Length: 99
Image 1 (cartoon, one colour):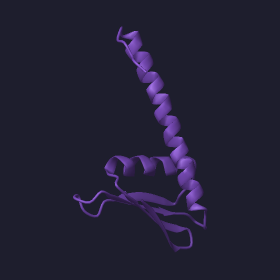
Image 2 (tube, helix red, strand yellow; image 1 turned 90 degrees about the vertical axis):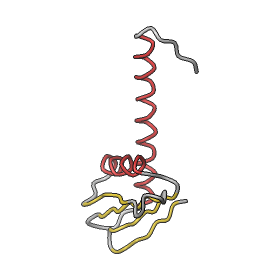
Image 3 (cartoon, helix red, strand yellow; image 1 turned 45 degrees about the horizontal axis):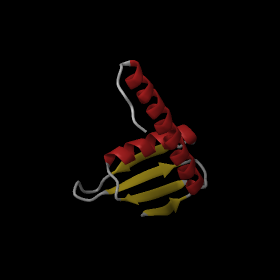
Image 4 (cartoon, helix red, strand yellow; image 1 turned 60 degrees about the vertical axis):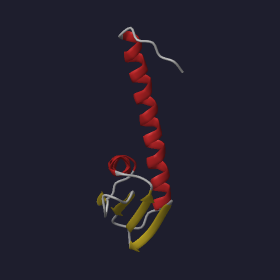
């Protein structure tokens, strides 16, 4: 589940349930790659809760949903590129790859 709140002009809080530090770190970097935020970071309020809270601030209002969609597309492309390079390296090293 994802909740998006507008905290003020250009300021957004995005809660992502069921995720951890890995997703928080990836989202921060992806948002930086696809947009130009003044500030972006994440927190996890409690280590026993899988809730990532992403804070994003821009100088003016943006369509944060559009930014998140672009960030997701960026991460999917990055993952695909990584997979291709990994499989190629395994094959070069003489390993076999299924699928």
